[in-house]
Image 1 (spheres, rainbow, N blue to C red):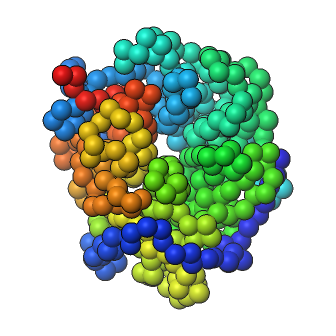
Image 2: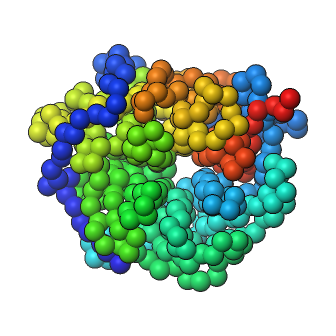
Image 3: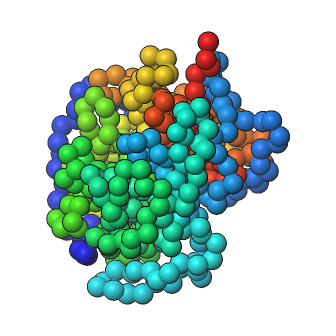
Length: 425
């Protein structure tokens, strides 16, 4: 197992040129504190009988599976089985940290998180899984999953585990082998750790969100955080692949350029329209501003003058997708069932705001791509999650493409997975 402490100030950053087309023009941003910071949490009322989210004309939305315990993330195995990571945010009292080799590591987590991965199998390919099994249990707030050959990697909040896997397995009983320690928990929902593998299986990329909103507790606690890390599958070779990403969650390989992209939750408490969440290509060695600046070189007034050297290096992300939208899910459409306009584009699960006077997010957005870059801004794809000014029916998180080309969307607060597919003619 490898553990590594890295200081943000000690990192060096490259300024590699952007790929393909130039990124869209940066958004026009208001000054900080142009509006006051508002706390507005939604009341979740659940879905009335017969009601579903709404998709564009020509698509049908149906319930794929339900009765989970906070289904946060999905992963589709090569044989078509769908893995569902079930985990939730815990009260601080239920996370039991201990200091190990300079990083806070957690013991067994209790207090309401299912801490399991469920397997769903639709063997007859009718769009409804008929097999449902507990695939892995006794995990520690699991989230991201990645398969390399016959090894399945699971990203818990406190580290990455490796499990043996055989095609067709419906349950793994072997004890996982830890390959990487990670700092536990984080600010609000920054406990999630996503993981993706390179195409050749030689590298893993692990996301770790910040421990704070904007470094208000000092940068010592941010070791290994607000980064995408690169590591070998055996746990060696750990390094920071990209830094200054406040809370990167969704990660996916853009199918044309094979570039890594991520969806990032930006900082709070600067007003309704600051700071926009974004999706961006991830440059090896890139620095994206957090906590000293946002959207490139816009200095955060709460960190003013602290690191002008890092502000000067900050890379502006590719595309703003709305302030306080809690943009978590990200996948590129690689199927063939959807109309041509969707192919190669990005779907983004926006769980929704809490630091805004009016709700934002609460949808699955779509961004068309051309030549490996966004061709335009985000548009609605799956909506209808907002009931009124104070209430929501549900909150979308993960988006992934099913083997038949349908889009699967987790709704973690109502314990459901939705399936969106073109209407059969």
